[in-house]
Length: 203
Image (tube, rainbow, N blue to C red; front, side, top):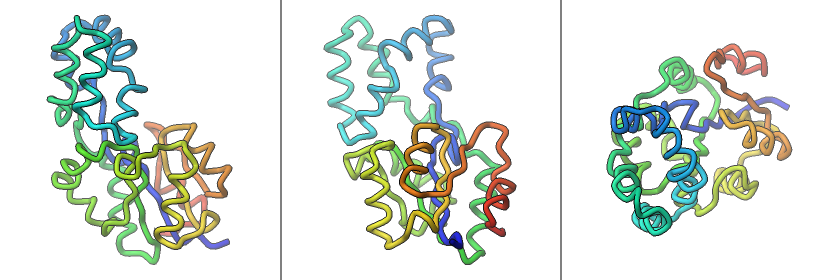
C-alpha cells in the first residue's frame, strides 16, 4: 500500500519540552527537582491536563494533596512557556520539506487545550499542518487510547495502512502499529528523513 499521509506527534518529535528547563534553575538542586517531578508534579498528573482537565483544576487538586509544595505546584503552569525550550530543528526541517510534496501532513498530540495555542502562535511551522491537528485536550482523550487515532482517521478520511505515525513514546508506537499504521519511533539520534525513506517516502 502506497503511503499518502505523515502524522506527527509534537513533544519530543518537533518540540523540545521538558519541565526541567524551568525547575533546574528554580530548585538549583537536582535531587530535589527530580523528587518533585517524580512524586508531586509527575507526568501522570500533567497528562490529565492533556486529557482536558483545566490547568487551574489540576493545580488545585495537587495543592490539596501536597499543600507544602503549593508554591512549586503553582510555578509549574505559570512558567510552562520556559519548559517549551525550542523546536527540534532537524525534524522540523523534514516537515518543511514535506510541504512541497504529494504527502498530506497531520498532527496528533497529547497537549493541553490551554497551552497549545502558545505553541501555535510562536512556531511558524505549525501552519504547514493547515489546521489538520488533533489535540488531546480538545478531544478529552489521550494517546495511547486507540479512540484518538480513530478521531484522526474519521475526521480527515484517511486510512491507517496509507499513513506513517511518528512519535517518541514507545506505548504510542505500539498502539499505532496495532491499528495498522506504519510507524517511526523517534529517539534523540533518529535520522527522520532516512527513516521515512526506508518506508518508501521520497522527500
